[in-house]
Image (cartoon, rainbow, N blue to C red; front, side):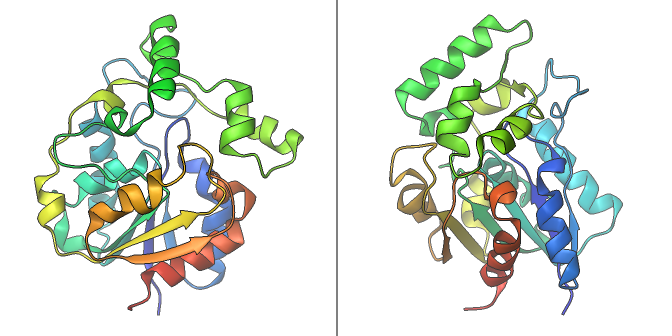
Length: 242
């Protein structure tokens, strides 16, 4: 049975990050969309971008294509986005899937769930930028985000990353609707993810989902690049009834 997936990228990425996964989903008979969030991508206007602008990027594509029974997937920062999308189009969402993604409490920001050393790094990067953005240093990306890729592949991908608007990460978010909604939820946990201290994503943030389906896989934080076929299969598994 054909399913419709809407794949939401994380910080520094764009919809392009999902190309490999989309190809594998389509080969198995499914449809997939991967919008680039407002303020993201190489030519984007980043000044003044808010978290709501990012959310609207997703709501707009769902409405423009009249998508129904959507399997909405959020990676990393994208978890905070899909958590708010459900407040706007709850009747169009079949399941929420969090891929090593942020699950926030009501009134929290993404920064509220980061360790102090990472907050310090991001604050220094944003303060040094002309437009309140951050961009991961090469060494951080290679060693903690995509340590399972060959150096030349990691470098080529790092060169495609774009500065991240900082405001959406520090905003306190209204997530009352998300924590009340009865939409089924899944969490995909990547066992070798080194971006946050062990236990931060699972079981730390995933436990906030209440009842959810857990799917595990090997790989770093960037499995859409290093394991696209396996990730596509895990997305299908995460959407099966259980």
